Image 1: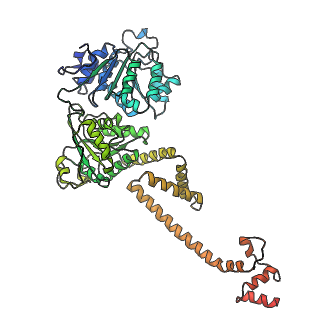
Image 2: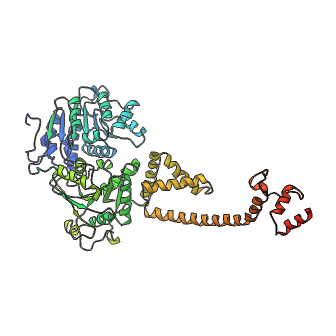
Image 3: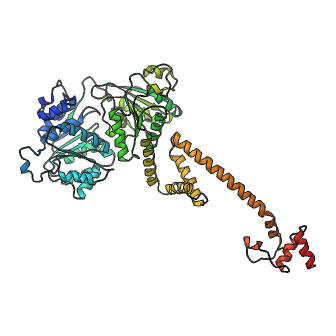
Length: 573
């Protein structure tokens, strides 16, 4: 170790035991093929094991999780360890790890659980979007390490389920993302619940001003550790090949389909700008024969976990995700990342592309730039010094697309049946995903969704209700503005539209017939009184009056040429 606050990796790879990690933890890691630490872990382990505060910075995918996770698991007191009986609150968490998203909480929790498999230390994951009672039960049973999101940690604490008086280690993972998502007040509130005598570790891919300010406020003389590859002076990882094309949005689906059929393409993450884009692109790829799943904030927690699990196990090999949802993706063998739209800034670009080229593997990052996004791309290009200020105009049929990405000549954007190997998610998942997405959209749009609900109820119930028709029209307008349905649902909707059109035509024909039958009577009614007010309006005026009455005479005068009216006129004369 050096006495400076910034360390660079210069050591060769060693085993975890060489850095003071317990043998049972090393054995658990070796059982899953992890035998030597990455640079950020080599630098972090000795300092973290000593109990000193740490600010750790490394590019995405370089192994930050085990850098703080292994010392955390080792330093807590397990049930069979010496000192368990001396704990003031046995079973209360001794370590708290805060992460910005549910997906990342699940991933970190799984990684730590693997490392602690042979160690008598219990790890639990606490996050929102699921019922709180099972998590409260885990806390009642006792645990040593809690991994959670800020919102759920505060809920559990305020409801009395979570005791934080015994926490001696706190970790802020992906701190820059935590602050970007607006969690700074929640994080500060949680830190205020903790004992002042503790070890604090902060890990982040970038170190913006707010992160540094938080570190200065809540940490004590932290050691700053930065893992950098001496041969990699660029701001992006050297293991990632950056490919950038200027593309037309109407051609993107076909382009992506052909890219996905490139030779050697493995697990792939496609990033979209919006949740609706993620849902649409995923369903489009499924219709083209690919095994794809969406991952975005409109999915319920069960569906999101299913999609991530399917991606990790190979049930699907394509994940279409938004930036926030994708922060929990930590899969080492992602070969391709595709940016469906240009990211918001260079930091987001780094987070996206960092999903590939991990753990010493090589990866390819493809960015499709719309004409409207060129100014934003130029800012990202300049900030990261990528050397592509003017992306080449590219279409799905461009020869250089096939050459650059190793796509066989003549490849189309649909996967033939004989090449469909992955199982896929199945229709039930996408039906559930659409229902979840529609429900969340309904709650978020408020009044407009009242119209949509009214429209659906009107279609199912009484289509004669004008409120239902209005609601349906307003709802369909909202859907047109917001979201395109899948082809299968489109077919169902078109069938329902045809049925409604037939009923509308039939109803219009019947109404027309009724009007034609009533027309003579209406003409008689409107001409029977010449400037004189008549008692009763509308249909009541069609009642027959006794002969000799004034109305009867008027009706006779207004009905010249008709037999009955002429007879009455003659009798009165």
